[in-house]
Every structure is written in C-alpha cells, then in structure tokens.
Amino acid sequence: MILGIIADDFTGATDVASMLVRAGMRTVQVIGVPAGPAPDADAIVVALKTRTVPAVDAVAESLAALRWLQAAGMRQCYFKYCSTFDSTPAGNIGPVTDALMDALGTEFTIACPAFPENGRTIFRGHLFVGDELLSDSGMRHHPLTPMLDADLVRVLQAQTARRVGLLRFDTIAQGADAVRTRMTALRRESVAIAIADATTNDDLRTLSAACADLPLLTAGSGLALGLPAIYAERGWLTPNVHAGELDPVRGGSAVLSGSCSLATNAQVQRWREACRPAIAIDPRALARGEPVAEGAIAWARSQTPGEAVLVYATAAAQELQAVQSELGAMHAGALVEACLAQIARGLVAHGVRRLLIAGGETSGAAVQALGVTQLRIGALICPGVPWTQADNSFAGERLHLALKSGNFGGPDFFIEALHAST
Image 1 (cartoon, rainbow, N blue to C red):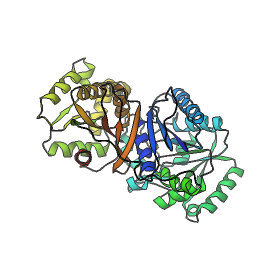
Image 2: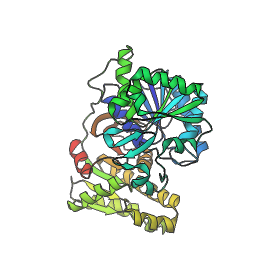
Image 3: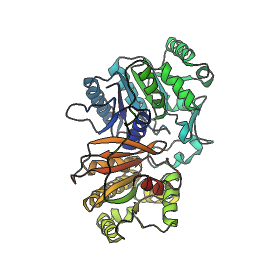
C-alpha cells in the first residue's frame, strides 16, 4: 500500500477514492477501522463518521485508523475532510490534524480543501463556493457546521494551538520548487500548518508534487488528483486501466436523501417535477413515535415494479430551522438518520440492489445499517461521486451504492446516476 487515507465521513471517503481510481490506482474503501489485515490495494480509505462527533472521539477514532494503516505499511498519510471545510471552532479538523502530526512526528503539513471541478477554490486563503465566499453560500445554513467565515487561516487557527500560515497563489504559480522553498521559509517562521491556495487542477498537481515527501497531507479530495502521477514517476505505482470496473447487479433502485443542501433540494425538486415516485419523511412524526420508516418501506413496495423511488427528509432552510427550533438540531438529525438507515435496510431486504444516498451523515448511518464493511470504487457519476460495490451486506448479496455529498451534482443528478448504473 502506498497511500493511507483517513476520511471524516463516508461520502468524502468515496469522493477521494474516486480521484485515485480514475488515475488507475487500485483503491479500496473500508468502513470503520477493520479488525483484520488490510486488503490488497494501492490505496486504502478508512471511512469514519467523525465530522460532527465530539473532538475527543474524532481524535481517538482517527488515531486508531492511523495505527491500522501504519501496520499495513502505508508510505504517506492523507486526512480527508469536506471541500467546504465543515467544522466549528471546537473542531474537528484542527484537533485531528494536531493528533496525526504528533503521532507521525511531523512538524509541518498543508491544509487544502480546494476542489475546482466542483467550484471549491481558495484564493488568498479564502474559500469560494462557485462565485460566492463560503460565508455567503448555502453553507451558512448548515444544520451542524454552519460556515460563517471564508478566511480559512482564521477558521483553522481557532481550532489549533499550532501556528497557521498561508501558501499563496503567486508562489504556487511558480511551480513545485518554489512551493518547497516557501514551505521551508514557513517552517522557519514557526508555521506548522499552511492553508494552500488553489484555483485550478494544475495548482493541485503542483501542490501534490511539492508535498510528495510530507508524511501527512490534509485536504479535500482535490489534492489526491495529482498523487498517482507522482507515485508512478517514483516507480511505486503501475496505473491500472481496470481499477474502476464493477460487477453487474440485478434488482430494484432507490434514492435516500437526508441532505438539506441547496444542491440536494434542487435534485429532489427535479425528481418530483418529473412525477417520479417520492415520499417525504416528517421529523415531527418521528419525534411523536409514529412508524414512519415502516410506512415508507410499505409505500415503496407498493410502487410499480422496476420503478425507482425517492425517500427524502430534504427540506428548505426555513422549514429546517423550524424543525430544529422545535426538536433541537442534534435530536432532529439523529431521528432522521436512524429512520433513513432503517428504510435503507428495509429496501434492500425487499430487493433493492442499487441505492443512491444523499448526505454524509445519512450515508454513514445507512451503510452501517446495511452491514457493509468494504467498498470497491467504480466510475464517476459526476466529479466527487462514484458508484461503488459492496460485496458484503446483511442481505448476503452484492450491492451498488452511490454516496453523495449534499452539495455535489446538478439538478438531474438522481436521474443521471440511476441511468449510469444500469
């Protein structure tokens, strides 16, 4: 194994894995820290559900993943977080980065959530979502990690006692040698973590080349774009053109949507406008103890055989805020996650074999409920979202899963993804 990746949620794990696979790197995603030996792969992504748990728990799980990856012989470690830098002043990006740096005995790393293909760019240390600053985007309404500041140096500095600095765009434009020189200077200035500007894929490739010898990288999925070529140049990797091939499956299809992002709201709306089967999950009914999951499963089974269904808790910002005000943000989220996970299990039990799940927390809960422990990474549906194959589940049959970050994909994503899986 060359690269060991610790991802803080399940959709982010498949996102970064897809970057490696499309460059011919044999990549396996494992769910949680395995008890046994590592599978045969060039890269292994350990998918954790640590983005919004208490920082102490996120650190403990991340260190356990690191120890397992070290035992498997990884050459470089990569801590993967969201391209919108989802976090709070308490963490978890800073605390996990600190713990990994301490464990690896390294005094310097970079932080670069940029993903230009999906409109996430960093300029002068400020994160943009499309043409908007992060703080002006829909992320300001995120139910658990509202992002109210686009200055990533300031955001990260609030989460770590280490000094945070900046690798500016004008240095990166000069190439990998200039970046290495600047990193040496930053170290002399006692900077331990540098936010790295990146507005294009070429910037990410430059950073990959400059940082190839760092024990630890911290980033979104974009930085992984340039790593396979660096490894191939060093003779570590022979790219495999079949790395993204999956085996066929037969059975029904369904979409589960827990994300309340602007992108996912548009995808749900487009599905409904096309008069496709859809049923909404009511958090208030869940709080009252009503059998919402059972009702949704029964409804899905009553639909026309072979027609894909959508089960969603996706809501616009105003409705989301009203529910959170009544039930509490964490409680409402936990109720919805548990319900959608139960529905996922019920749908698979009744023959669904292609399941698209929108939202990081929802994806994590559903995959765990399905008993999946390992995913093979397939071809991209859109930047950041591949189909994956689970060879093990509680149903004992192969599944195809697409785990979508809430902010990814265009309005027709649900329809396009299911078409791509046939």
